[in-house]
Length: 397
Image (cartoon, rainbow, N blue to C red; front, side, top):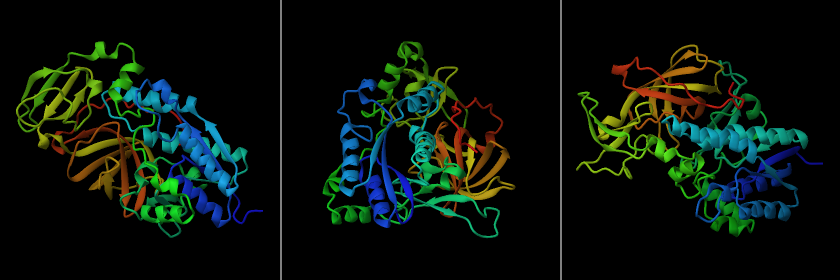
């Protein structure tokens, strides 16, 4: 009989998830390891050697840890549900002129839901992952009393609270994050002390698992036959945000092949640095501007998941992040409807990309988050918004 009960641990084969399983095993949990197969690299059509969490090497690495410590390990095939939700969403967002964030979608929906379903079948009370973040249940007299909240990990360089904003209250109540109170350097030392030297020397992958060569343009072309021909030849528009002047300055390869904030790889030379400041699908236009034209001081966020509070009864001062490595910007957020928040930044934020996730913080706590629908300058409110193509895959409550 285990000391703390049975727990299902997501094991990618990397050092973080492996040490999470090791720590829980040492703490007296009855650990069951599970590695999720989300994608067949061969089907992507890429040219690079298979790496990352779905490779055979990674699966074997996770299994070896389980064998060494004497707990069971399973492989879970979720390629079908992953492809239907994450890859279709990834492709669809680029075709809508937005920039998707497939890792957030996968982490907080596909993997969590899949783990909890299998945990129930294996009589596991809890699941665990190797994310650098913390979970706590609020126990005070505030409106958040009793709710489960993701908060930042203590390692600022590795904190992954941003990618966990979409996890539901039910899921948080059954989740353990054993690495949140540790730094990456401590995890490496723990692996060395336990003789898992191969984990310390193993390189980490930061690529999208189904685009392992980082060529998302090539992936889209293979995924959507005829795409290149159907979108090529639109206009590059040079636009000045202050004066409103616009001028055609060249032809682009197709609006899905560009992202907000992009500077390199535009295939156009104007004698000074320019960036993609807007993508207009209907007109097949890619708008260019100088650095100052990238800044917006407002945005609309939808498809919300609120963690710390069930609803925002009044405007709330927050620090808001618009991408994973964003340090965050002070902002006033107002919930205008059940599924819509208006964000007004204290200062302009560069390269806010529709399709990316926005996450709201109160101190170290994640208030919640959602998907960016549009950005704006507060002096130019009233623009029409295009529908967001988020798939209905559950647990957005």
